[in-house]
Length: 285
Image 1 (cartoon, rainbow, N blue to C red):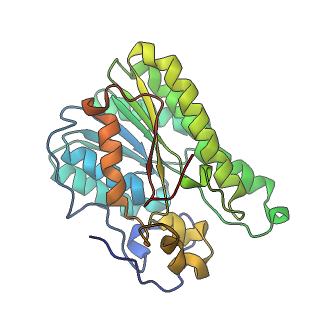
Image 2 (cartoon, rainbow, N blue to C red; image 1 turned 180 degrees about the vertical axis):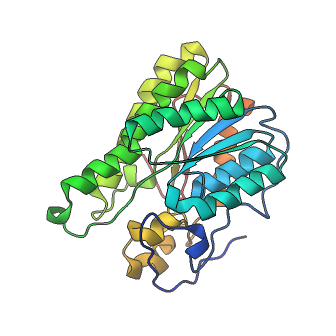
Image 3 (cartoon, rainbow, N blue to C red; image 1 turned 30 degrees about the horizontal axis):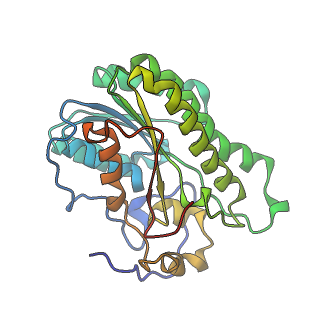
């Protein structure tokens, strides 16, 4: 059982690193045990260096998949640890540093993953930007654009680039959020992108289902990741955010990974266009 995180206010510059969090997140390094559910599969995970993405990459490798991770260059220290864990599981790891808000890089990252892995079966659109703004009038065009480029455009570009490589039985999984259903007033841009991800995925799922490609979404609640400590929430509110859930605590990335494993595995072969909520009991429509 996980307990509530007892943390003081903390803040990181940039996109944040797992290694610099005062209370380290559990990404499943010592807790996740695989059982061969993804043996021989090849997965690309964006934002795979830290938080949810790292937990997914680790779980996929321990389930038998080869994994490519995409991450910002300044997150290299976290990425190296994830790559090492993938390789410790006996799987191939492909590290792809770069900025997915750049169209050419996003498309090229898919090609790099396909080449390095020898194919592609699973695409996880997980990388995200979340930056709180107290006053809507202070929400700049630049931030609004970057949030949509990171959370929506990159998903669009990479999904489009991946499709020619995805055979029947492949899976596309995107990360939404409780914010799509219960938007915070300080996260207007972020919440809007997460609602977009839901609708995008439901529509695309209907188009790709006849081809045997399944599209689904995972919608996390408050999860203890570097995103939160790097401006995702006001620092003074960090200690109380998790207490708003019925479970009364932050979720850990390791608690999200099984949802992504399920949606990528044959066990979910009849699950299409769905949103799987992993949010500690927060009500959703």
